[in-house]
Length: 209
Image (cartoon, rainbow, N blue to C red):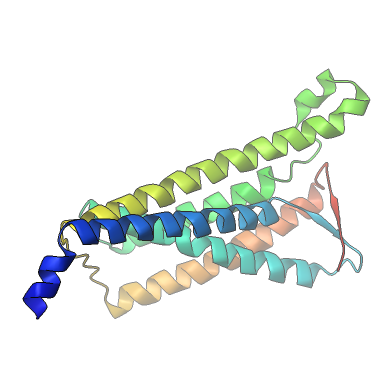
């Protein structure tokens, strides 16, 4: 029975299943990622001016975006047969946190960040800043989307070749990863909101609760 099932699944059926898995993941994950990145790239004017509420929501979105981002890093590294050690774990977390912070700060440019707007008439400057913000977010989303697609392709190709993905993690490494990950999330949340408070974004959006 198992031999018949194995013969049924290899290779045309398993190829079809992998294609379906890839397409469904892209279909649902990329629009969801785009929505989350857009949320990070928007600085709201809260009616109650509740900084605690703002940080809590941003921290949640940071977590949601960081999970697929770090997972794609790990999948790509595994496909290249690179062992996950403390240095690699630190690099993955640092790169992920840096990406999220870039989205938050450069997705909400202050007056000093968009100096070329002075080349345009006053009535056009708001639109120019908005175009600049959208370009930044689109560029970063394209990089993240490409990374996720490459990770999925490497995973599907490895599954097709029956490659075993092995991640050797010890307790010390897991603890180290958890500490720098959680600490990194809180650090970029604190610094990002502090920076935006001291350098108010050019285009704020009213938030309706």
